[in-house]
Length: 237
Ligand SMILES: C[S@@+](CC[C@H](N)C(=O)[O-])C[C@H]1O[C@@H](n2cnc3c(N)ncnc32)[C@H](O)[C@@H]1O
Image (cartoon, rainbow, N blue to C red):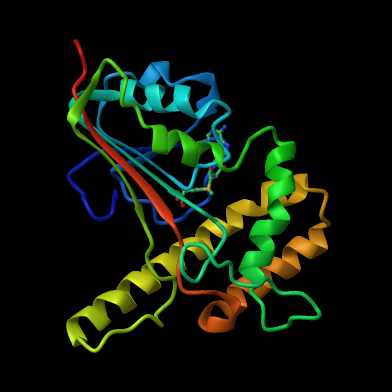
């Protein structure tokens, strides 16, 4: 965001320091536990965005309201959450890697392996998805005419194609975009993987296989479900 829009000021918050070199000069980061509330950021932002943070909020409904409170009048809140279970058609789960099924997906194995850890950390991984479905429809500060929620299912990887060359190019681009993003986000899965009681060696093997297998379709499948909640929020004051 900061790179693409050099004229805006971007603030990123995370519970952990983010180690990145070449950070753009219009980007600031702050260590902050979102579950402690966001009061110090109230009313300051034109856009608030959170992505792939299912499992982070101990009370997602309260978190949605806290994020909304950080907006300036007319600001936009965009939330994107993914189902980490990769499917072929939204429903049919792609098989995970096991010794008996070496053609299976390491990514799927990692997602399933991490779920007990998410629960141990006290969070229901499907809770944010359910809260997004519920939305903020009854929230007094919301403009109901502009609030939308959608489930979209883009491809992962460059394999999806079409007879129409423009559409084929678009599918390739979207697929590569999501695969690259998911590879980055997967590295954050470490914390829940450890909490699930799995060994460090097993996590390292999983990351290595997911990263190295990223060019091969057999490690992935075609689709990921993304839930998108966008709301043009008009603040009361
Ligand atoms: C799956 S990653 C998503 C990262 C990024 N939003 C993205 O889309 O690439 C979840 C992030 O939430 C952070 N996180 C976990 N618990 C948090 C908390 N209580 N408060 C703030 N950040 C938290 C983690 O450190 C991690 O960077």
